[in-house]
Amino acid sequence: MAAPGKVAAFRLPPLPTIGEIIRLFRLKAQKQLSQNFLLDLRLTDKIVQQAGELKNTHVCEVGPGPGGITRSILSAGVEHLLLIEKDARFIPGLQMLSEAAPGKVCIVHGDILNYRMEKAFPKHLKKNWEDEPPDIHIIGNLPFSVSTPLIIKWLENVSKKDGPFSYGRTQMTLTFQKEVAERLTANPGGKQRSRLSIMSQYLCTVENCFVIPGQAFVPKPEVDVAVVHFTPLVQPKIQQPFKLVEKVVQSVFQFRRKYCFRGLETLFPENGRLKRTEQLMMAANVDPTLRPFQLSMSQFRNLCNTYRKMCDEDPGLFVFDYREELRQKKKKKRLPSSTGQLEQT
Ligand code: SAM
Image (cartoon, rainbow, N blue to C red; front, top):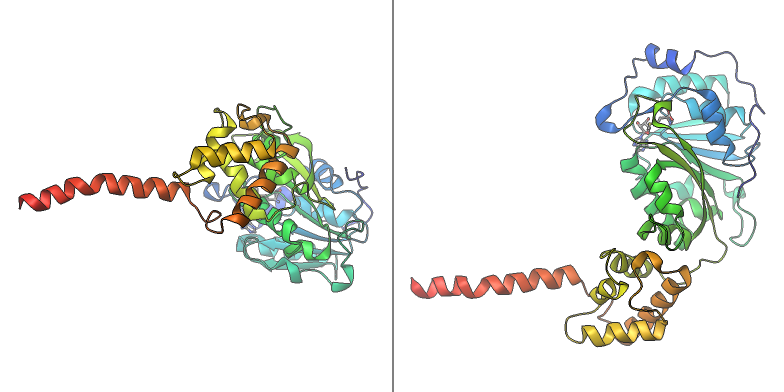
């Protein structure tokens, strides 16, 4: 866990409040973009403290909006702050903040899903993967529709040590819908144990820091929000390519309430499916009657390692697509009747 950082290592000059900024620049939240703002600077300080000590570090904030979290990051005494904001309406308000902290802020009007993070920070900040994390942090309160695909993309970056992780084990402090945060951090047997639990925990130490009640936001979202902190592990708990782990984990969880055997079957073509699933479970030493949420990380590791061996022995196996097989079967079923019609005419 990151040691909570201090705030107020840097004093910003007097500025309009976030509420005043919103009124001044007419920054009405757009519901279709899931914009919900934090106006309480004690709360934004608390979020930023979860990142750990930020003094003299480089931070990238994603989705700064009207700039509440931005102020807390600047107050923590960072060396440099990169802001990536998609909605152009927020840029003038962010420029005002930038002028209050001369030389410290760089504002990018862009989409974090396309932004090339491997070039975002100075090269001298790079650390070896085995070393302590670099003095680089990513912090953000993003819409839920962006934060989940983004964390999947960043987890893949962790596995390949590229993107923001080309600098080493860059830490992230991000908000998620409370339920998603519970999934990210769920233990085996837990109600929320899911694909996201395995994908995040095999690569990172993941900590569910605290819950922000929906009413703390303006406008209030329908759900509560949680702050989650990620530190990439030196050694991933599963040492296989991300896409392979993703395929195995997705297969297991697609039939959440059934025995794990049912989901794992879908890794194999119909011809020989039962036998090969049994082989996989035996070699991985996994009880086929366990439910997906009961499987431990080491059982997932065994399954991935065994599946990898099976793929090495049968190069066509990894590209096998169960859904495509179902589609083809349906097509074949439809074919005889259309042939029949042709014969009648
Ligand atoms: N950080 C501010 C706060 O806590 O008050 C705003 C939070 S609001 C939930 C999400 C912010 O992310 C908005 O400013 C929105 O425009 C921005 N945003 C949404 N999608 C984005 C994307 N793909 N890239 C960058 N910013 C994005």
